[in-house]
Length: 186
Image (tube, rainbow, N blue to C red):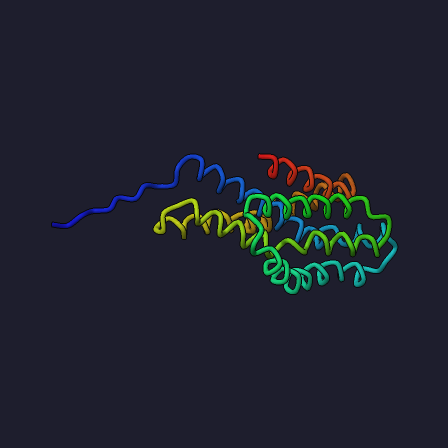
């Protein structure tokens, strides 16, 4: 006799959680790439050349590559829900600090604060999303969560750049911080 095991699609609560994770990843991805769109505005506002301002992109990337694995190792015993909230809090603080930074040195510090939780947060979202569904749906939820990065590239950064050009680059980061606060609360 053959026994059939029937698996169901993700529950409504799982789908909602996955959508919120997609939106959170969208915010993180937008902030990662946004500097490139408002680079000239940043450089003239804080009084550095474009090439020096471009270091904000490099510093962010290096922090993700080096700090991400270290933060992941340091937080392996932290329960997932408080950890994801703490990581989002760092993003929010980093973006508010970026928006308010009075000079380039302070801007660098807040970009490091923003970049530090990036890799750990992204990995945690993937782990949490896949834990919400049966094994045959895990590929689907990984695709949904990572869609946030793609949307950040094609939607978030252009919108952030438009906001930056119309209202000033600082508003771009402030609005992303508000968006991340909303997503975290949800």
